[in-house]
Image (tube, rainbow, N blue to C red; front, side, top):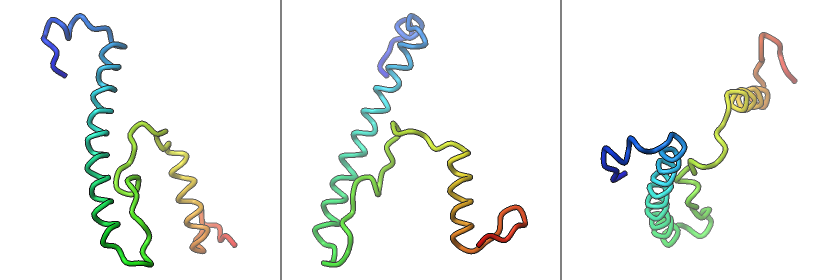
Length: 93
């Protein structure tokens, strides 16, 4: 982050966290630019019936809401039901 040792120790936890978040945002923006270039190259050469590639297909935004264990369990439960599987030994329609 480019901090001297003295500057680092003078920071509060909140200030350090804000600096860390800013650094993560700068890093994400750099990857976002790279992903945009990849999408442009891919989309110029894709077939007429192929779906256009978007940046969000290649890169997950770290600042979006994080998925919880409950969300993941609900996703897998729904996928199991759609595939005709059973949950907890009970057959689902």
